[in-house]
Length: 157
Image (cartoon, rainbow, N blue to C red; front, side):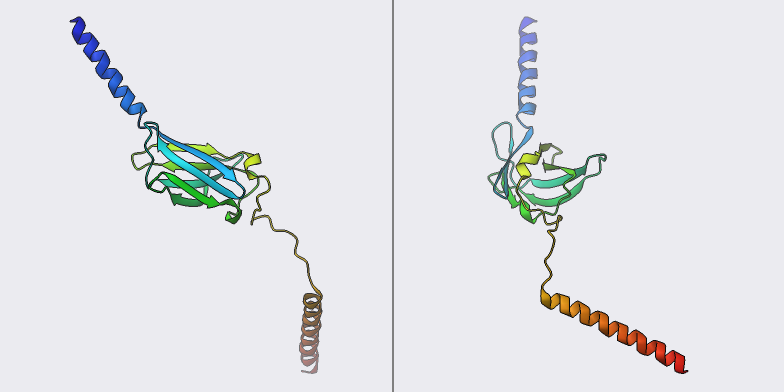
């Protein structure tokens, strides 16, 4: 009877170990404007061809917006250029990897990870040159002249 209990305990521990060994993990680093990451299973194997997402979540919402999606390589790695991603500065950015069997791993990016990376959504003020200024004034004069002509013709009728 004692041998049966020990065998059952060993079997239970073996099953738990294999379940723990299958958990999905994701690790992310930012170097310059490049976000690089790896998705792997805790047993040590790479998570091959696993979908990866960059999600934005506003502060007072659970609604997620997907800003980028891709998939891991055969080595479990992925990367993309953050300066090409238009993002709202008020949102939390999360990198998520999801395996086909339902495992999900996330990595939340910190504000300092994104410091200094240009954001296409936040546009810098644009300088207007003299050519654009002259063209703008000419357009206004042309429209004013056309409106004057229309008013004059209505008055003659």
